[in-house]
Amino acid sequence: MGATCALVVSSCAVGPDTGPGLVPAGDGGGNQSPASSSAVPQIPALQKPRNELDWRECGSRVARDYSTSAPSGVTIECATLPSPIDPDRPGDTVDVALTRARVADTPADAAPLVLTSGSDLPSSRTLLLLAGGAGKKLLTSNPVVAVDRRGIERSGALDCLTRDERSTIRNNGLGGGSSDTSARLTRLSAAASTASDGCTETLSPNQLHFGISYAASDLESLRERWGVDRLGLIGVGEGSDVVIAYTAQYGGRTGRIILDTPTPFGANARDTGANEATGVQAALRTFAQRCSSLPSCAFGANGTQTMQSVLDKGRDGQLGGMSDTDALTAITTALALAPNSPDGINSVASAVAAADRGDTRALSGFADDAASLRESDGQLVAACNDVSGPIGQNEIPGLATTWSKQNPLTGNNSALSLGRCLGWASTPTVNPPNSYPVPPLLLNGTGDSINGGNGISTVNTVLTKAGADSVSVTWEGLGYSVLARSDCAADAVSDYIKQAPLSGPSERGCPT
Image (cartoon, rainbow, N blue to C red; front, side, top):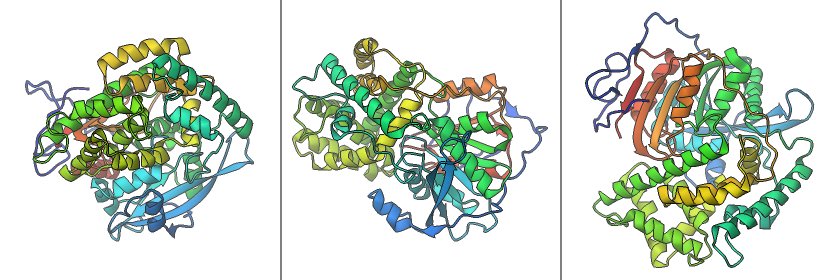
């Protein structure tokens, strides 16, 4: 993907005349990316459900579950959908949790958009982020329905690890009196192996029914229940893998494809880990730089050094019971969800700076929130089901050394995390689609602190091989989900929903 321009402007226009906000990307010499052809036939409009679900207001409860506030002026409703555990063997079902967001102006006959953030975060939490930010603009034209991934939180939360296994995996093997990488890996691999055995026994014969292909089948169950021909899909982060898998398995039933800061679909474990280490390191560096430009940044001018100091303290057992992995997950998750504002940035910086001084209360609270959002049994099972090209235990120490030199804050943790799925069976790889029924819209956030923003290059390759014409919109701000944070990107999505494919340049930039 070409480099994009980062401009600070006040508005955003989408279309052939991009105006001051949505900036066409080029090569710096005035050569814009080619525009999509006006001769391309328009894609059929999305449909209102013929058979609606039993929605009930649940905003206060969902917000309370996630220790956050319900978005102002937004109605949040919940429903459940029974979906076959194995679509090839109808019978046993899993109750999939659905969460809908709408506003007073949402047209009663509007087609819903379906949101998934895969195993990154519960999709219902991502929906609250979207509805409380720039994505709220989308609700004036379409309701958005989040589908929590099976096995996670409200979608039949799994419980198959012991307390010791959870703790060891959450800490990436830290403990036992040694912080040496090899010693950590030995402890981590032992916990991963026994966790695999326990979950296999608990979940049998369905232990391999939590990968992206089965998450995609839950979306198909929703389409069938609604009685619509196609779904408009929004995949955020790892949720983009679910959307691509749905398109591969169910072809023409995809009516819109929005991939928001996608992970590298189909990449092997090593490449996925390397992408994450590099991308999250870049996000943390941007965080420190943005904070240092504020008049009252708790970091001062040395944010990266402060974060490194905190991680070192965690590794050495000097962080109030938090490990280095706990601290890093706390920082990245808090940054992913923090308001896109000086106060939001400084709130995370203040917690890190206080922990470096010995006051770990705020960072510990972030760590607890992060564990509940990202470290559940169901998320581990889903991640291990999805592993492609698993790596050998003997390869991890070398990767830890190399990646740590390249990415001091994230490299060791990303390498060790590869050990979480050692000994686990994985589902067959989902092949990418051979074609796409609709040109996808890609949003990419370079400051994503959950996955990093590097997955889009792999996804672009996947799309190119399938002959798909896509439009890419880049945003250089901080946080999880471009759609949740950029008014300009939300406008692009709104136009795309109304009339796909988008006209105008194929590569664009939104202001930070």
